[in-house]
Each structure stands twice: as C-alpha cells, then as structure tokens.
Amino acid sequence: MIKPKFIDYLLLVILALIWASAFFNIKIATYSYGPITIAFLRVFFGAIPVLLLCYFKKIKIEAFSKDWHWFAMIGFINLVAPFFLIAYGVQSVQSNLAAILMSTTPLSSTILGHFYTTNEKFNFIKTLGILIGFSGIIYLFSDNLLIDKNNFISALLILLGSTCYVIGGVLTLKISKKKNENVTGSILIWAIIILIPLVSFIEKPWNNIPRIDSTVSVIYLGLVSTGIAWLLRFKILVKNGLIFQSQVSYLIPIFGTILSFIFLKELITTKVLVSLIAVCVGIYFVRKADYNKTI
Image (tube, rainbow, N blue to C red; front, top):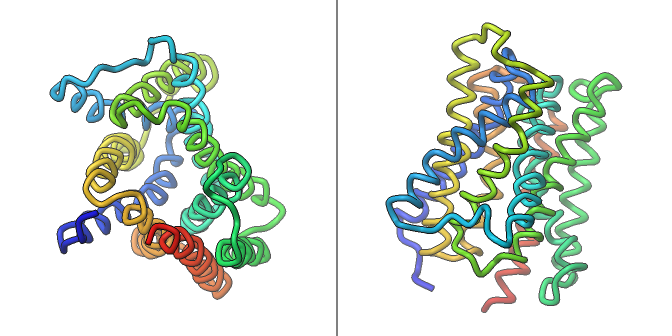
C-alpha cells in the first residue's frame, strides 16, 4: 500500500468533519422534521451524487437484479433503521452524546466479526479495547445531567442505530464482489422505496411549515454527510486501504463534541470527556490489533 501523503490525511480529516457535523445538523433538522422524514430526505438527497457518479462512470446499478433482496435488506438495516433511530434519539439527547454513542461502531463490529467471520477473532488487545470503550459508554449513561429517565430510551436507540450499521456491514459481505458505488447506489434506491410509504402515511411532512435552518440542515445531511461523504470514503479506501480509512473513527466523536459546542452550545461535562477518551482509547487498541495483524 502507498505511504499516505499530506493530502491523504487532509481528506481523512475532512471526512471526519463531514460525518461529525451530521450530529448537530440532525439536531437542527429535528426542530421542524420528524425522524422518518429526516431519514427519507437524507437518503433522497444522498442518492443524487452517488447515482450521478455511477451514470458518468457508466457503473451499472443492480438494485433490481437477482440480488435485489440483499440490497433491500441492507438498505433497511444500514440506512433506514439507523437514520430513523438516530434522528428519533437526538430529539431528546444532546448531539454530542449521539456522536460518542455512534462511535462505538468499530467496537461492535469487532464483536460481530469474532462470531461471523473466520479471520477477525478476539485477542488480548482487541478484548482490552472493547472493554475500555464500552466502559466509557456505561460511564456516560451515569451522567444524570445529560441522561435521565426521560431520555434514557432515546440514548439506547442511538446505540441501537450504531449496531444497525455493524449488522449492515456484515450483510454487505454477501455482495462484497460488487463495486462500492453500485452497492451504495442500490441500497440508497431501496431505502428510498422503503421510506416513501412510511413518510407519506405516518408523518406527512407537506403539512408542516419547516424552519429554514432545519431545511438547510436536512439537505446538508443528504448531499454532504451521506452522498459526498460516501464518495470521499471510496476515494480514501481505494488509495490508502481500510486500515488507514478506519482512523476516521477516532476523530468523529472528538469533532462531533467540539462542533456541537460551537454551533449549539451543548453542555460538555466531565463524564462526557472521560467517556470520549475511553471510547477513543478503546478504538485505538482495536485498530492497533488489526494493524499488527497486517504487518
């Protein structure tokens, strides 16, 4: 693999900032839109840059091929469910907590990888990382200033959303031989198909008069945090590989916490900082184990 250059690290930081910025924008979007509408608009606007890229690169979209059921299942588990759960949870939980809770994805994927793959088994370093990371999350739930009986379930739903990403990633292995752009475009199409009846019959967003900031945020979530971010992820993956790209996991909760303070003035307690450090340390040990395995 080519040694990363300055531009590669710059792109990694930009990707982390884009994904981290999603959390405070979700919070702003919830001021006017329901969680199903936010999920629908994210996949709708997110599909635009991805499908345009496939069109110009003449990449065939196989959303309705013989593997359509895999695309539909992954679209639901990897996009519909987590986008809805995160938006629902963020209605009553600070967005910086959502950033920290969602950053557990690498830890959860390590646990699932142990049971559902042949080459991702636990070792001492991975186990230590998982224990440290999830200890940070448990400690975060003890912060009575930010998580109480009124929003405890909301915080759990966000954590469930991160687990959906992991399960979706495992299912994607079933179609791993297909081009990333094709897979992403196909699952986005199916996510839109699934969400159209839900948003039409349950939330009926056309009856609302949304705030301008909420509308800007939800468009940003789709075009930038979903569509452009996935394309940027592809670029980094192709040039620098999965190990390099996975370093974005350290930056997202840090940037998410900083951005939520800057834009929303959200409270940062001592327990939030301790949990943030624990999660980042846990991810570091898990990634270190993966890196050592490749050299």
